[in-house]
Length: 597
Image (cartoon, rainbow, N blue to C red):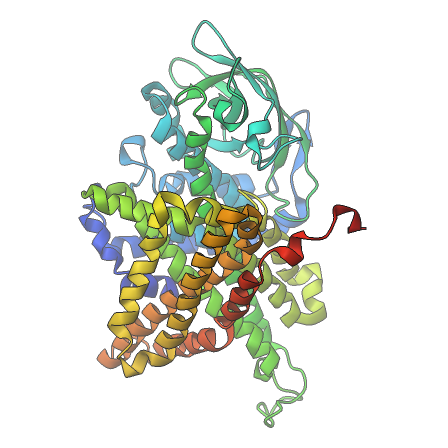
């Protein structure tokens, strides 16, 4: 049976010692927040995840969702677990207090997302999509739409979806065919088909709020002609209670590789009533509010899967007896040594540990910067933080989901044949993790976004939001003898990242395919530097704790040892990625299409 223990000590270390997240209490709207309160909330959230959500993960995978007469039934226990989640206010963790939410920082919400995704990714998706709908309506909806929908979403009585993809178009949303015809009462009739709609139909909430991209009559061609509409499953009446059934129905449930307990639906809209969110033809801008939150959420799915897969790998490696250590007998009272003594098993565990802990620090930093971008009193500081979040979002989405999938596979490898069997639970993590590399923009699209949009934006302003602090950090600490084995590898890789940036910018101006060919390797190189940067910060925090004699000595020593492994065995990948960027796109693009046979 799989295991999961919320990594609260690691989370507290990042919040307290690495990020100093208590500074969030100085932001407008967070005056009542304290780190102690945040930690208490995450402790309770961790219990909920471990005791209520996690026990349903494997059974939910086995049972899946069922569709009958347009209605979807979720697996046994899901409805009761969701009710506990909603009744205790978790759906509104980061929602405004005026709408019935807790008003907690995005940083705390980010940490809670990790816990949920480790415990039960499929069930967590129902809640995560609702917050995305809340954010989009909150930012772009009219006052009437806010009053009607936001309290219900914050309460968890209603849930949300994001309806973008159609049978003929995914990433290229300018090709959508769904139509919106205006009515005299200010509503619109929405007609079209959307596919791959997560949580499109289910029995967890009394109403489902679909955010739908569609085109108005005579809309401009392409993405410039997209508008965003809220289309509820049940049309609310004047009192805000659910009314008549809307003309939107789930026609099919997809049979999938993973996340089987989340309903992935084909949704048909047949002149369904909808209401415009924001301005006509500006729907993609509004939807990006949803998509950016979703991409951060998907990054947390990668991190969450990595954490629980790593935990199970460790548990099995400590108890599974096979052969004797190459260095001599380690368990003389047993017929063989536990496999954790073997170097290759250690390699897999250390890779998983170093990436998971580094990824946590990096993604939490993005969560805190998101708070600053929303709440800081200084407009320049808000802009700086917003730039930082925009730059790092595609990086952590792609890297953490790639590595979440890899670490899940490593857990299966550690288990050996037992990992390939359903009963162990770890093969489910491989299947569940795989989708995170695809949805909310494939990881290749994230790389194109990085080099095609984020790199040149405002003459490189976004890049400077990361490059300048890293350079200042290196200059500040490069003379510290205790840090040299960490600072120097990071500085060397950072220098090559700067060189890659210049090379891609120069070649991309002459031939856009050159930038596209380098994009995935550049993103991976960028992610490794960012992870190394956070590991340096964690080493400093751990060293300070060891010098002060505070806390668990073994915990902080393990941080430093893990950082050494990252610098020695993970960061060197950046050298290969740098060489791949230098290689250019000729060998990738030169072959004639007919030769692919």
